[in-house]
Length: 284
Image 1: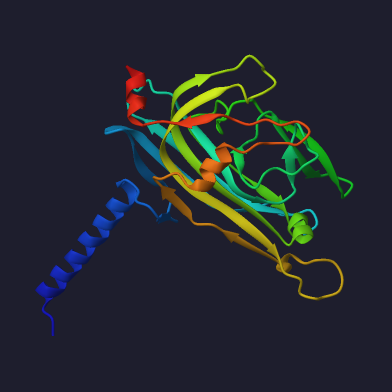
Image 2: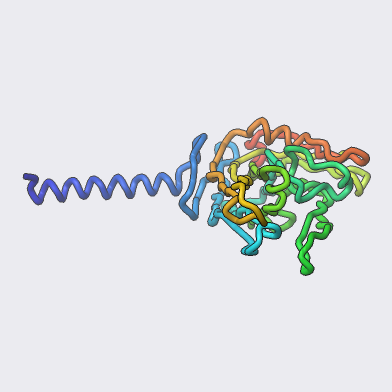
């Protein structure tokens, strides 16, 4: 039978191991495949070999509008965070986000809504989107949401990072499923050169260094139960992707940076990827 002293030692070792794991989980630099479910999450960010701040993801969870009828209900996710730069830093940081997998018809590019958006593209697309919205009479209407022509997701809200993508269940019913998968990166801006045409982004040039990324998203699938009558909420299966910190750009992200939007009217960003050590060089 273990003595009280042995029990105390075992308990002490257990507590130390728990505290150590929690400390590493909260403050260590992320490795590939690090999956996070507990929040807030604190991740150290480096510019080259130099510490340049901490990225905090404070919330990430399932979201629904709350409409009792599937025809007008929307499901999605909400994610919130903030970058805390090192004191005295003059580096320009931004968020660069790509929708790495998009299956749905809830919105299209505002400059050419005649064709669907690509499977992957910089989010949001330049100038804005045309989106479906439910209206009071019980139908849908089309509304334009205008954005600037810059590639940054934050649109002057930096250092705050907030996104709340949603999709109508009706869209999942029509297409069998809706999928929105995102890859977001904290970047430093090494260079930016606007072109002469304010109505196009294809003549603008950007160079950024990717510092820290996170993958996230959701899927909504429709499963016909075979019952007669209107659809029920139980016929829609929602799944939230785990939040995953990454330190290597995915091929889908790179492809999204180069995506061409539109058909009758076309446009695309030109974003070059540089070395993170140049974030520090630019500061001097």
